[in-house]
Structure formats: structure tokens, C-alpha cells
Image 1 (tube, rainbow, N blue to C red):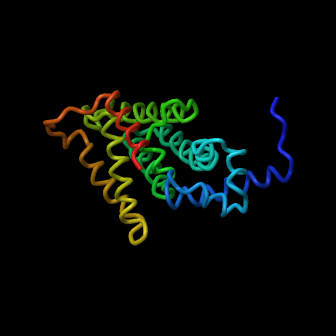
Image 2 (image 1 turned 30 degrees about the vertical axis):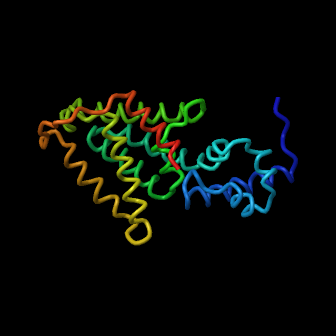
Image 3 (image 1 turned 180 degrees about the horizontal axis):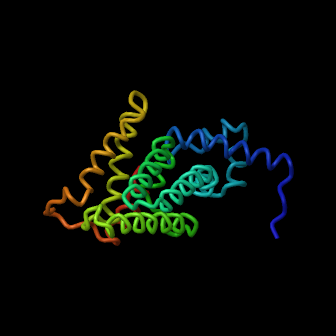
Length: 212
């Protein structure tokens, strides 16, 4: 059984999480751990005692954002109209993405070997499959869209957010709705390039986690 933290240790941990939330949100998952420790008013050794790896700290910092996203996703999946559910799912996803660069990075990458992050990404992938299948099942979304196409949209939206967050923080919504028109079944035309396979998609997300 894990022993509860002493009050001073708990306060240090809480300060580290708060500092990490600010720094990851502003600078992404590769933010300086030394700066996080300084902002929290603790030594870097204290940070590593509480969070042995960057990923441990990242997950502690992202839990409120992940909860916000998953709650919104559940509501979207409960909507009666499958197309409206598809739109609401992406609106919720991109709104949370736009508010936190660390979450933006987390969405775009895979961290193999970490059971917690793999589980979260698997849940998100299943949600994408479900919300997309519902819209395709009633003939609203074009039948050739795949999970990889949605992840490609997440990647492109991340770049839009990076470019526009300071001057036009809601510009991403215009691009999303332009793409949603392209996803409608009645607007479908043949595409000369097949979608990425699940294996290609996974490998691409792992590659992004290694790029600095």
C-alpha cells in the first residue's frame, strides 16, 4: 500500500504540477523541466523524486485536460444525430487542443512502452472509429474516411493553432468546418491516394515523439 505524502511533500508535488501545466501548455511536451522546477520553487532533484520521467510529469499535468476532453467526447457520442455527434466530437477535440500546446503535442504523438498513454490513445482511437462509423452508417460522412484521416486533421490543426493562437485564436474553427464540408458523403469524389494503414499511422505518431 502506498504511503500518503507528508504535507510538505504534497505541497511540493502540487506546485510542480501547477508549474508543469503552465509550462507544458505554453511550450509543449518538450518544455524545460528545469524551468518547471524553478517556477515551482523546488530543486530539480525534488522534481525527479516525485516524477521520475518527463512522461510521468506530463500525465499528471494533463489529467484535467484529458478529463475535459473525454467528458466532451462522451456527450458527443450520446447525441442522437450521428453527423451532429461527429461534428461535436471534433469541435470538442480541437477546442481542448487549441487551449493547451502540451495536449496538442500529446494528441499528435505515441509514447510506446507506457501503458497509461497507450491506453488513453487506444480509447481516443476507438472513439474516433465509433463516431465516424455512426456518421458513415447513416450516409452522412463519406465512406472512405478513416481514423488516419482524422489524425491527419489533428496534425494540421496543430500547426494552424501554433500559427494563429496569438492573433486569431479561433481561426482553427474555420478550417475545421471547411474540412467537415469535404467529409460530407454528398461531396465525395474519388481520391488518388489510399489512406494510411493503422501501422503507418502508429509509426508516424511514434516518429513525432522522437522529433525535437
